[in-house]
Image (cartoon, rainbow, N blue to C red; front, side, top):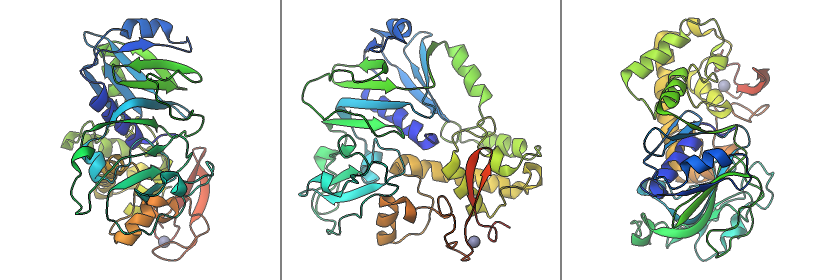
Length: 375
Ligand SMILES: [Zn+2]
């Protein structure tokens, strides 16, 4: 399940490559043929994300609503534009899974450092090469499809001119899913592969959507209704009112805080990883009823979510550890094992107190926490 940062990254990619463009829309799979016919020939005017939902405005009162669900994925091909924020975050874009970002030397085959086992939980060790010269970023995982060749910085650490906003041919997948893409080729647009629900095609870039939970043409009123039904998303609304709304909702409920954070009606975009990490960082027992969590603590969790979500969007990783030195940061970007306080660390000693991290089920999802730090 993509957590909120992934969907925001996808929306941002659409803003860079599709907003202002007139698109051909089609449904190679056929299931969205009617909707695609409505979108076809229109110009995308805006793209926004709230929590795990994305809304694309095609002018007038025509919107596309997409929820990726567990298996949905967007694949971009053709000219993919990176932006300064992606660039400053060491170039990670596309892969939003948890496997890691491997910083590899530009002269090496980027695939060498990519994890060849698509099921592996952690990325291969990053190159120990010094950080000089132009670099490539390889997103570890399925090496065929998720290697993004972005030249990032020159030897002086300055932005390389060609790397900011420069279009390049690339094929990028944006979702949790990583498998099943064909090899890159030079034909544009590439033939749709598999069950593509909708294909959006500009003169230079193509985006294919597969496996979403929701993909429908809606009106602006529909969009507003969906947004109103969702808890606040700091990237959509970072006002004091949003913090107040979250705090008030949590503090009137008897439900355990560990469940409230996963409830998209309470707060948008938090999934299993951020849930566990936010609660550890706040030193809150996941079983505590929302109404018994002190107000300042609830507000602190919101502010921490504001911060962690922004980091997730910039880095493409659910980076939840602070104050890492350079080496620690490199390891953490490359490997989940070095990136989290408690998530997937069951049985391992707590980084703070040494107690074994607990694993239990809460709301049919795995919950990781430290019974001492979060007593
Ligand atoms: Zn602990």
